Each structure stands twice: as C-alpha cells, then as structure tokens.
Length: 133
Length: 307
Image 1 (cartoon, chains in turn yellow, orange):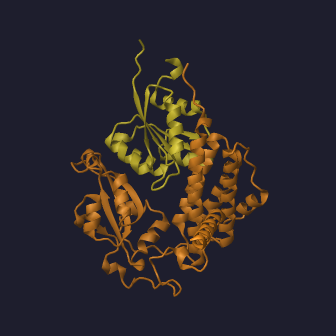
Image 2: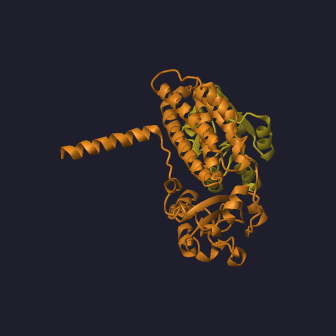
Image 3: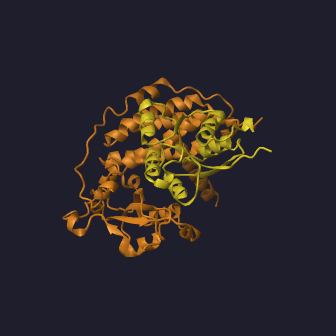
C-alpha cells in the first residue's frame, strides 16, 4: 500500500468559471484537497484562520490584486514559506518579474493545459504525480 | 492512469459568465460616458471595466475562443492607458469601447449557436488602437488625509482623491478595522459579510489587510482596515462591523476639512437621488433593451384599446 499525504490548496480567482476550471484540473490528483476564495481579501482571511499547503492565485481581482496578496502573505511569519502559484493572462516579462520579486513561487500564464497547472502545483508542494500513484 | 479534464466542458459556464461580464462592461461604459459629459473622470468605473474585459480575455483563452481574445486583448491594452491617464475618457473612446463590447457579444452569441465566432472587423481594432491618445495624465494635489504612511502607500492616487473629496460630497471619510476570528465567523461575521453590511451604509473605497499582534480579538494576526465614504453614524458603522463605535476613525477631522462645504451641483442636476444618467437630457441604452421597451409599449397600447 502506497500512502499519500493530503495537501490543502486554496484557489483564488474572482471568476467562478476559472476557479472551477483550476479546481477540476487539480482534483485529478486525489492527494489535493481544493478550497476556493472569490477575492484576495477572502483568501487572506482563510489563510489567517486555516492551514493551507499552497495558494493558486489570480493577479487581476477587485478589492486587492494578486500582488498585494503575495506581499501580505510574505509579510506574515506563519505564511512566509507558503508556495504561491500565480495564474494570469499577463505574459509579459515585466509582470512576471514584478510578481516573482514580490515573492511568488511559480508563474503560469493563461491559457494553460490541465496537466500544466497540476504539474506546477504538484511541484511546489512536492506531491506525487497522479500517474505515478 | 489518471482521469483527464477537458476544458471545453466548461463552455456553457463560460458563455454565462462572459454574458454577465459583458453586461457589467456595458453598464460601466455608460457610467463613464455620464461622468465624461459632466467633465469628470470615473477611474473606479474604468478599473471595473478593465477587470471585466480582463476576465473575458482569460476565460476566452482557456476555452479557445481566439477571436474574442483578440478583441479583449486590444481593449485591455487601451484601458490600461486610460487607467494610467486618470482623465475623463473622451466620448469617441467610449464609442469605440462600446463597439468592441458589442463585437465580443456577437462572437459569443455565434458560439452559443454552434457557429464559429467571426474575427473582429478591422475598423473596431483600429479604433481601439487609437484609444488613450486624447486623454492626458494629470493628478490632483496630495489630499489632506490622516492616514499613516503604510496605509496610504497601499492606495492608488484615485482612491486617495476619492477619500479626500468625501466632505465635498457631504460624506465623511472613515476607517473601520475588522479582525476575523473563528468565533466571529460562527456569528456570521467574515470579511465578505462585513463588506456587504458596510456597503449598505456607504461606499467602500478600499479594504487593506494589515498584520497585527495576535490577540483574542485577532487570533489570526490579521486585521482589515476598511476605508469608507459614508453619511452613517459611528454607531451604525460599529454595529455593522461588530466593533465599538469609538473605534471608527474620521480620516478628515473637522479641523482639516476647513471650508470644504459640499460642492453645489450644476443647475441642471437638481436631484442628487437620481443616477447620473437620469440627470442628463440624453440617455443611452442598448438597442435590444429599446426593442424590448417598444414591444412592451405596443402590448400596453393594444391591451388598452381592447380593454
């Protein structure tokens, strides 16, 4: 029997369809438990009250943007090491540099394939690829 | 072998959300137009419009609707220029953006009917490429707000301007802090519900998350500073957020407001309770809505004649 530890992933996007898409891609790996937040503020609240192993974050959201969420997370001792995968349509180098400098772990541009986003999340939390289970 | 996800399965949900985003885009464009006719900028509406277009672009890319991606991409680039300018959006720019929204709407309708969405007409793309050339960047003087520098640094210039202009519109600029906790969540108090309650009492300009020392009130070491324009009392605001009224902070105390009395409205805008578009002599509506209205009117006339 191969034991697989479970990892909690928080998917943050103001678009419900986009959240559902990302969640569907990640749920292919049964070791990932996926929660959702519809705004950066809701995400920060959830992160302060619950334990997550990775954050999948959109950049362009109302109230506060993804970069502000990254900056806030990195300013908190408890969350400083939390892996953050940015998911965005901004493919330009300036955006990528700014976000990575703010403290993001990975940067994925839309459109992405289901395998690509799963691969990125698995990589940051050290999860076993579903095909290998 | 793991199961595979086909993102095309999300097409019905995509069509529904894009329709919603396009309605938002259209409504914000009408707001922007109303502001421009008054000689005012409306940066919040421009940003909301930008976000709606950005969402359309991202979703369209995910399900492979490339013609819509092309239009949304041009709109996004143009809107970025307009956001940076912070000036009233010129009416030809509004027209170009309205045409672009209609273009995506047609593309998506075709898709929903099983047809291949057409490419955008070149004149629409050319008009979008010209956007922002009329508008110039200009910022007002730094507002006299009692905000600490950390908080002020989290606000965009237009948000500072809005807070500073509060007294001129007969409203106070205030700060209220909310710290989430499991106990408050059990009582239905979360950042989402608090925002809804405060939104009923005024206009939320910005919510800023702040790291605080962990305490019984803030076990997650987190507090949200809500910056609000409102006419509500401290008691009403405190009750909405679940905090004592004395913790509500006025960002522009009376001593600093000076002679910032409410700005008289223009003589052709006597009633502040009316929406901007209602205060003007010209109202723009979507043709489809006008068709609906005409149809209802016809039914009324027929009913009355038969009655």
